[in-house]
Image: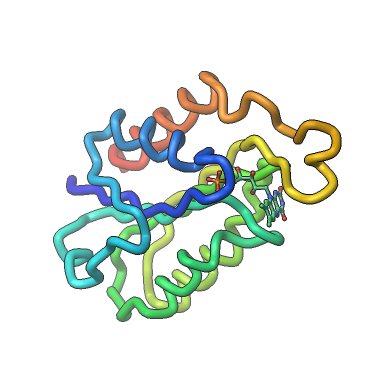
Length: 149
Ligand SMILES: Cc1cc2nc3c(=O)[nH]c(=O)nc-3n(C[C@H](O)[C@H](O)[C@H](O)COP(=O)(O)O)c2cc1C
């Protein structure tokens, strides 16, 4: 199975660490959102979209990319994110957008990521040290499970 992981990681490189762990565990190709050539998506059986969470949603680079995508009927996709709170619910918005485009959403992953946004900076940030080794292991296990589906 050919897998592509598309990501944006702006705040602290947290999502980039997660995407590297996932990619390594399943031998996936990894690309930063801005470098993606949309016509290459046809080559992949499974595509992951991920970033940090900004005001409750994935990064606007990912949102704008999904808006630009053609309807790729039934292509398998999944969503991943890191955030100060680590809530998987933050992925819902993008999952819904992908479903509206006709994609088959097969998974969703989230973990905490170091966050120094706004007032959190004053207290040295939250989710310090995240993602950590356990997060990396969870990300790897998640990715392996997806390719076994
Ligand atoms: C402008 C801004 C808004 C953010 N909004 C949220 C948010 O709504 N919820 C949350 O849990 N974390 C929020 N965060 C924290 C980031 O999602 C978190 O640090 C994430 O791991 C960053 O990923 P990255 O380093 O890959 O960009 C925000 C951070 C920034 C800079």
